[in-house]
Amino acid sequence: MKARLTNKRRFSLTRRDAELFRLARRADHRTLAIWARDCAKRVMPYFESARPADPRPRQALEALQAWIDTGQFKMAVIRKASLSSHAAARAVGEDNAARSAARAAGQAVATAHVQTHAPGAALYAQQARHRAADPAEADAAAASERDWQLAHLRKRMGKE
Image (cartoon, rainbow, N blue to C red; front, side):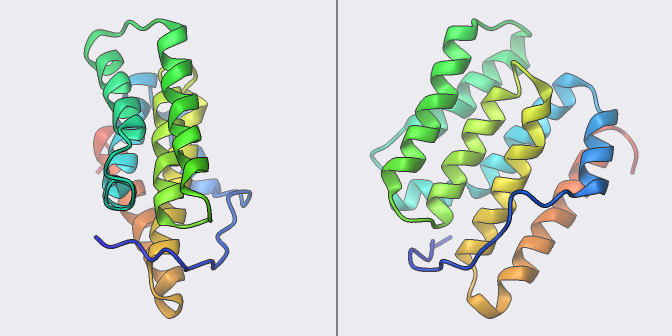
């Protein structure tokens, strides 16, 4: 996956995706954490190819995985992992797929604390796909990612 560093097409994170949010409200906390992790992992190559020496977003996903595995976390660890991943996003500079991928990881790890962060991870992953695509294909790329996310969450919830 090669990130397009100059694609500045807009993808609104403020739009309300009623179907995604409705489904997320019905999922349990752990299911949402796994789903948020999976959404962020799908776009992590955008960040890692642009910033291979920066481990912060990957470390955020590892912190989330520890909570998924044990059900226990220290708030200081989760907060630091989330803020560090968002700092990595800011370090990227311009708006691009790498920046959105780091933000997806930051939102995903925050799901351990509050499950309502999970849709944020999904939306940032959609934004990463949008920004990585050629302009003519950007909307379709984001829509395809959303379709995968909805199907994946339904599957995790046992509602195929």
